[in-house]
Figure 1 (cartoon, rainbow, N blue to C red):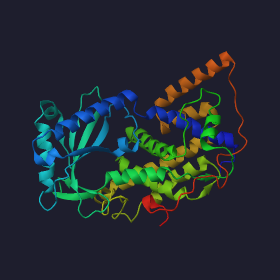
Figure 2 (cartoon, rainbow, N blue to C red):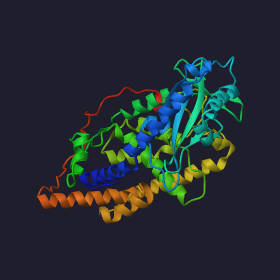
Figure 3 (cartoon, one colour):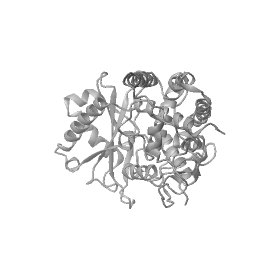
Figure 4 (spheres, rainbow, N blue to C red):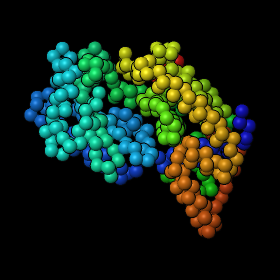
Length: 393
């Protein structure tokens, strides 16, 4: 139980929010990705193959969800795309055929041929080392059995088509992120409260909104995972599992009333394993947008992956609790840098100190008191219970 004043809990949240902004892709990186994305899309669509003539290319994964985190060390950021062939049909075109069409077209480019690498469900383009990203292009065709505009993607190893629905997944994730929890021990608007917690530094033009909380939670999970497995042997849980569990936990917990945002976020993080279905050997983390897709299927054939997930999660909970117990930035910064956020914490802290010094110099440094909570009971946005991401059925 955290019985510290409300402003101390807000500082915990505001500090994490500020530092986590540093793990996002920079505008320059996004520009590089966008340029590469359009170039690949145009090359595929300019083919003489009738199936590619009507191809539609769109983003999926973290870029689409806006949960990207900058890679640590020499790791490359992956950009996930779908190349949908609307004219293809599973009764006519096999998994192998659909995959080969995309691969053949990419290999026709002198540039892409040198970058091309076949993967089980996609074609990977490995860009120059300086770019620090690769692009995974997943071939797809419409799923006639899905009423939600689902797709079928080829599994090269199984030589069969598997259901998926990244666009519906993105819609459901966005819907979950818009559920605003109700907090009882403050009477302040959420964004204003975060701004007050930052009152000793320069105000940000875009303070964290309630709908940003789910995305920040996912970014925290990804970065903590990356930091942990950078120095620990094992199988890092894939991002789609973390994202799905986070959205499920968020959707369930947001329907309850909470004293403050920090208590809410801690519980969302702590309860991730509760939304892993099944028993050892039969684990399920189901895709809420595509019937039959189990993101945790490899946990059942490679049980060490499940073991590593639960081991990592126990450390996550312990590290978040250590962060909560920390007193002041002298204790907080090392935890953020080494366990939760990473080296970007240092830049955030330097910028923060510079801002404080500037405001001291010009006489505008003010520490605004916070005597209430974020949202009074009943002030949150009312959202009807849904079946997406585990909300009450």
